[in-house]
Length: 473
Ligand code: SF4
Image 1 (cartoon, helix red, strand yellow):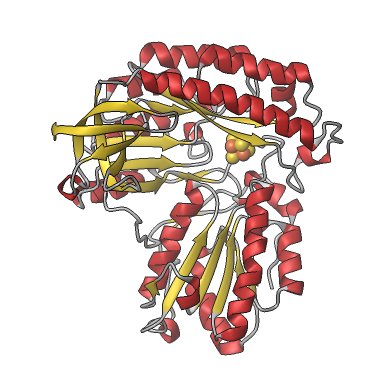
Image 2 (tube, rainbow, N blue to C red):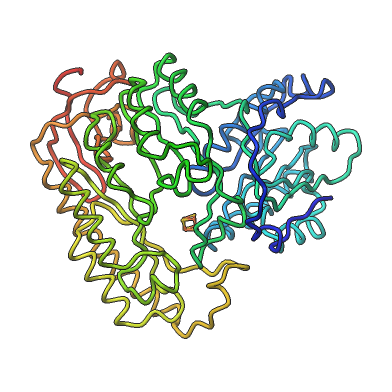
């Protein structure tokens, strides 16, 4: 049994991440184990987790399992968890009861993985009180799933393999992408920023960038397969390459990916501290790098930003925001905001409202602060009641919605380009996003799926727009 521990997870030592290319193997004993059997993956959390689930799906299919969305129908249930906020945690724990019930009725295998498994307290409790979970594994060893499966089938004993390590980079793990048009591409793993509220540096390890040539090869393959859009993924993509010290950075990566000819490039998530002028210049220069930046601010109060260890002041953020707006035509900018960080005063909160009024974000993802065990912020004694935090969130959301609608109104009767992705719920319409990441429900038929089309925007809502196709690109 390998259980995680916070002490090791905190270490940022001398380990030099290795690029491992041969580590994914399927033991002969499980090569065909999934024949006529089904797997179901429940995914919680961010895009990194969604992409991890795409890797897990491919691994399952290498063992001949078939995917199902129906837990009742599955022979293996995989729960890919998120540790970032309490409600994601509660949802997972709530679902465990249903899965246990299914396991009592049917001979199924259950796998618990992802960021929650990397939490010391959770893994200990799962391994002692939830013996019916067959495999508990973390974020560093997805590629070893077939080996753990072989072991539990042979030994009929719970397999716990969660490592608190700085981590390496694994190439060659297969992927079964959810979309035929848009692809997630990891460019780095882990994070070294250590914002005081965030559990990610402990669950995902030290920052490790993939080599530029490996990323480019993946994107070139996607272009050949007909993909239209890639999103370069990482916890702090702007710091890409710093750990490699090979003389290239995020701006160079964006420029190189742009030259592959892929139609659309996006990237998330950006930490303002690492956003360079060189990056802004590259984004402005290349048409296939989308004019949309997600730039988390988290708070408008310098006092709170300092306690969060965000490494920028409100003024520095405003300067960066304005520079991006000036240099990238038609850019849209979204953000993340946490309300109710420990001991956030009314004055602090009003500074956050002020900055929203000043910058008028296209969109803001807003959250009530959620203490995560083991993070520095979780040790701060908080004097602000949950009721106050909820009222603040409601007030902030009203403002955020106002500016989302105002920003969208600029699009009325305008022509935009939309990548048509999938049927939407709206009476036979199809959904897609503009270059600026605005959701559009388009009146068109299925022949436009996977195409970038010109759309005339006819009506506006707070979170979406409606439009009609004018012609193909
Ligand atoms: S930059 Fe901060 S918030 Fe983002 S993953 Fe790293 S520590 Fe967490």
